[in-house]
Image (cartoon, rainbow over all chains, first blue to last red; front, top):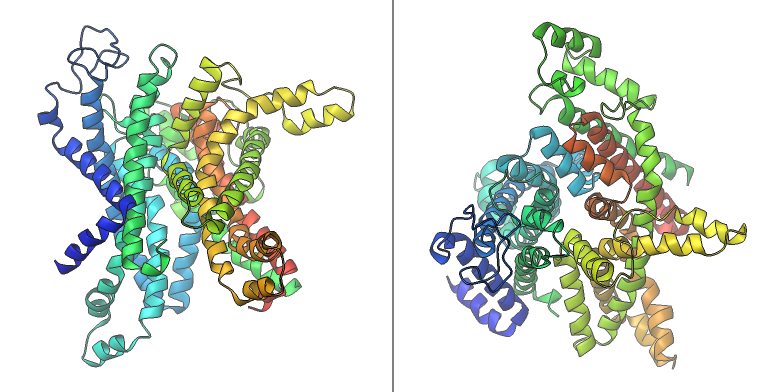
Amino acid sequence: MDRIKTWVGHLRNDRRAALGLILLIALLVGAVGAPILSPHSPNDFFDGVRETPGTEGHPLGTDSVGRDLVTRLLYGARVSLLVGLGATILAAFVGFAVGAIAGYWGGWVDRGLMVVVEVFLSFPAILLAVALVAFMGPGLSSVVLALGAVGWTDFARLVRGEVLALKEREFVAAARAAGAGDLRLIVRHLLPHLAGPMVVMGSFALASAVLSEAALSFLGLGVSPPTPSWGSMLADGRGLMRVSPHLTWIPGLAITLAVLGFNLLGDGLRDFLDPRTRY
Amino acid sequence: MTSFALRRGLMALPVLIGVSLLVFVMARVIPGDPVLIATGLERAHPEELARAAQRLGLDRPLPVQYADYLGRLVRGDLGVSLRHQRPVVDLILDRLPATLELAGVAFVLSLGLGVPLGVISAVRRGGPYDYLAVLVSVGGMSVPAFWLGLLLILIFSLNLGWFPASARGGPLAEAAWAIFSGGGIRPLLRSLSHLVLPSIALAAPAVGLIARMTRSGMLDVLGEDYILGARSRGLPERSVIYRHALKNALIPVVTVSGLFLGRLFGGAVILETVFAWPGIGRLAVLAVGRRDYAVIGGAALMVAFGFVLVNAAVDLMYAALDPRIRYG
């Protein structure tokens, strides 16, 4: 609790992190409060006419088939957040397990696992995600699995490095002398030390998962239509760029602000947890 | 040096095998029915499917299938595209130059913009330039490249009409050669005009990353004793920054250049779709829509192989340039 208070105090001096937090709160409010904030359903059609922004009842206009853009943006935030969180939690979990095992046991276990990490890093992330979704078939769970599968390596390398350094420390020897087993040592004694750096990395991982989800749905590999997703909204507006440029501007802006929010928050958290890197 | 090269080569081998195993697992283990996928048959008689499975060797145990797959891989056989009815290797090699060209131009662009931005930011630390540079770099990392691509098309192609919105304007190298072989400058201009928008969109995220790395590298180096030494000997500030500091600050940037090229390849997957650029990314994305699985797997495999080999080559170059690495 005290740490959180200190952090809030820190935010006053770190305007960029504060901006990031504001963006993310807006994202969360939009996603959770979508049914309250908008009187429409994301899949309601209005006259089949494409409206420009500023029309009564449709502040940002309607899309190519006449669905309210604000409503679809709000519901699209749900997809972004859901996929981002799901993929990041999966990646953090797998990455932690692999990294802790590699760093803790070392030797051939470490070498073997690091080869696996390198194998995954050999693919451009988005290409691997595209291939995985292609073979698994599109859909929410495929996207989460695919993005988790490309994201875990960063966590694994981070955790391995930290564990390699931590396991030589005295408190580890003390815990072991007190009779702690390997699993208990890793989870009870090493994990708390890793929480900070993992939260920082989690924030950046969320940024890149939201970005990748948008890219996958833009390519038609995301959640199935008609579920609104910012990426597929961009793809939808693409054919109408000349007549309705707002269909290109607005969803892209939403993606950018969400990703920016996570990036700024990650920067802020890192500066807070490791003041040496502070600007 | 020879022993280092040998060791480095041996290190790449398990990774290459791992890459092939991962692609194999993706193609044969994950999907519902590999026979349907390999044959492209949607609704077929069970007997027909069984025959196809036997013909393709898909009825044998997985380890045997993998050994078989590896054997064909070594001979450069990645299978045949269902859609194009051509070997996947040929399809990929046809499109590789276009992707390399786009990624290469974006690479040059991102270094050319990112390094100066990072230097200014570090030298004017805390000033308005620094703030602007940090803003540009965080912004560049947060803007989706494909959206930036769409906006560039919207503004510079549809509205202003300055650059073409799609397709490749002929190979850049050939166009450049035309100047010397009497073809004039037009082919080069044409080729470049098609490259402008996609390469800017592709480079933007990398500019941000490179600017950040250069900035923190410069800040580290500027605090070193030899910089103080250089200043105390009365060297002009320009010389201190560019001759003494920048060279060392760039080491981490150069070290990850192979990684950057890999990222640019990934970005190209999407941007090629936006700009209808006839490269590997577009090939792979189109193959997804057409359920042409041999092409998807083949493209992923070839790109990953290329990445592993380029990284090994980069390491060898370093070892040749910097003896500390060989013995480190």
